[in-house]
Image 1 (tube, one colour):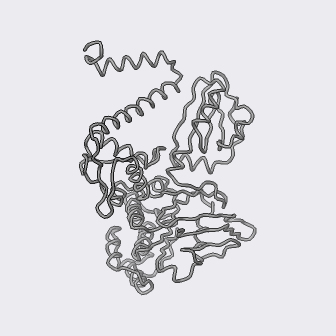
Image 2 (tube, chains in turn brown, blue):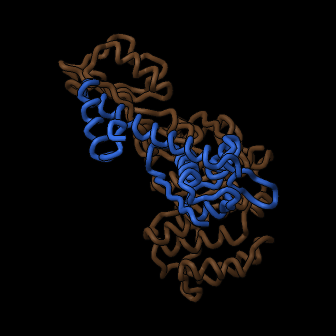
Image 3 (cartoon, each protein chain N blue to C red):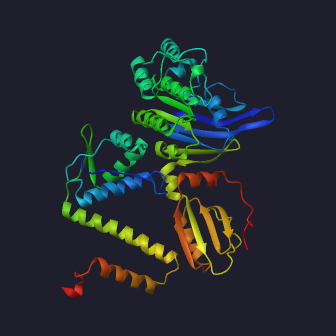
Length: 299
Length: 136
């Protein structure tokens, strides 16, 4: 069963397309990391998903139904930009949440607030950006949500508190919660997520199980005696994402079938062919790279 | 638990494969003994700070490979099979994978088969000195 279903979502602001024909399902119990450069459409996607913005077309459902106020009894959202009231104290927010959310657990909130060393008497306006993020995180996790949507949850936090957030996400996932989160901290995504979706210019450019992607996506590199020249048709091989040529080196980013592709390169008579694993950072950069002109540094 | 697992999430090697290899190695070396209990999926995920579904996937595959067995409500345990034989085979698998990788690397550096063979012989002499077949 899918906890979150985004079906052909399109959102235009005026003539500007923020999200274009995006379809993404997040299975119950899965942790999906949403990656993309700034302006790729991550925040807009979250807004449409939560009913904070109207989709131009397409649909979103949570637990198979459209989002209603009741959805938020079990779904928690941490926005990228603080939605807290600057003139209220941390404690005021906790009291407000207790009134607003049926599942709000004050003991859990106190425990989490202590983790982040939050002072409940302080006004939000007097907190650093990181502390404000921490308040939003405490409020989100204190309802023991079944679905968590986190937009840059590490934003403004130092590495120690980033790890605390990561631990909370993993703990929630281990308890069966579904998580959809965006982050520029690829190392965090690499640990917490079992599923990756990469957006670029409002479109989904890569989507899949993280371990499967790491098993499939490879760099195949061939070194030649003379200048490397890719024969016609190599770049259009269905396995190839893109090809780079740099002097005597020919480097292909393949999406699968690296061993077979390596054999194909062997036939060109190179001095050596190697296959390299890709980290998520490599996969991400490869997916959002602008299609480089094949000439470039070649020859 | 006597075995300690570490994984490198930044590596290009899928996390679940890293875990499978580590458990197999621990069983082969005896740091995980037959009948010994493994941490729960949740405990190991929290301990390593990695996705719990990834840990669960590693456990499922280890169960399929008959390295561990899981009984509902009790947890996962190292299988008691022909321990000595399984251990020997697992160690050979690990050795083959490490040496295979090294040979692949040497070949990708452009070394000829003869050259690799010589390097290999020298390494054998260094590390297996006194135990070569000729000596016995």
